[in-house]
Length: 634
Image 1 (spheres, rainbow, N blue to C red):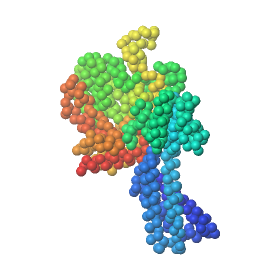
Image 2 (cartoon, rainbow, N blue to C red):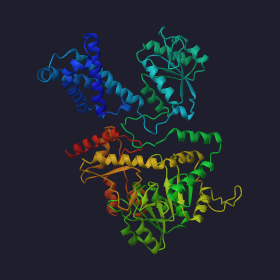
Image 3 (cartoon, rainbow, N blue to C red):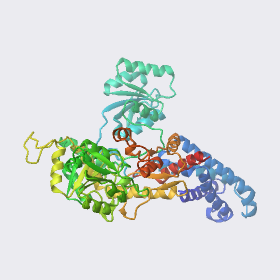
Image 4 (cartoon, rainbow, N blue to C red):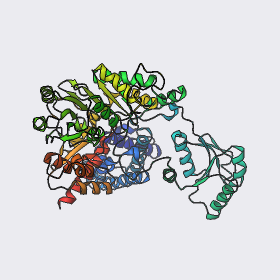
């Protein structure tokens, strides 16, 4: 962008010269006499403009999200640059480096042209910049279900109509304008007709079958607005009184339509494109919403991704882990070894079968279960090990599998955060007897809600299919059930999203890795912040979240509060399971039982992270984080 600004500055000067010479000196050639005189001015201007932009923060602004204040800041920066350029040119460049009469009117013309070109460049960025996964709503086939009449064809009304026309997911279709300006009546604005004055509101509502009226007249007299409200109440028809499109969004949020937020960046965001939406629409049109072709296709793709023989789609990761406990014949009184540093479902699934979770502390570097501590936790009641691949980094599986084989234990992989990750070239999930992948919206890929079990054991695969479907076996007839089962079926809608997402998985993982590497680079100056270290055994990282570890003495909770105040969300990952109230009450766990997990739980911070996160957004997080750390250190 700096290079673009420098080039645009030179173009602005050339245009200014063309304009000046055409008006004042029509007999002079542009690229001869005056160009030889003012070349120091051109060079200095090309350096000065980007420099002023840099120090005034223009390059830290994300023009995709630019508002009026951003363009005002740009205008001020251009104005300041013009003042500096004028002073330096007149008092230094002209006396010492320019041979001839410097055309002073060029200073004013250059400033005007720079504002036009540099500002126009930002407008183009705002209008054209898109994430690769942005949705083309026109391609989705979504038809808004509420016809809207916009009262007011001024700036606010036009902006509202534009947003509604380009975002049909809002559910509102603008049909026409009303405006008292006689010059506008009969005109077409964005293909919408200004159908008449406001006094015709009732007539137009009935004629065009309007469902809702939006009053977009921020400067209208109070009496005019009251008249419109009276018209609407007399029909009656719902109406909204807004001063800008942002106000409309806020009102829609209160009605549960569109979320709004004061955050500068989201904590996480699924990478959804029009392909996923079209896939869901096709399922809706098929009328087959449960265990159909999409589920079968998704299972086949998931098995291929895991390099496993079988995949079984279920409703979520918790249900997948529970079915693993059932298949492993975990009984009341049995013990299952797992990690205390994880999402609580990896331990809750053990309790579902009235068994006892036995925790093994973690390695402080990888944050995964420390294989060296497992053997001391094994008793005569131990039946299985649930290995959690935390944050998408594989646990050290070889020693874990060796220990399990010696003690005849079943290994279950909780890979809910690690689809696509590889341990020494092997995909996690199917290294043990079975594994689970989950697809919550903040995961590497999503199906909305959902998960798959993967296994190379055909007997377990058939059992999983039966258990997820109320215990009905493949040989059972309608409403016959061979065993106790559960309603853990994934819907066809979720599976359709999953099919598109898993086909894009390599692309999604690559993009997330790029974001993580940018984070590592940008955060490197912060000595009190340590990114997650990748183990030598991890031959492919699958980034679930981006976490950092804060240095001792820095309050993670205070950091979260201060970041939130600056519009940057952050989350603690994880609060150790053994210190959760229920586990302390049920099993008597206390602080100090698993010191490495507790230390991680107090110092690990998850920062905003999503597939299409941009460098400018990461820099925004860095600046806020650096500021609050410095504030705390004082």
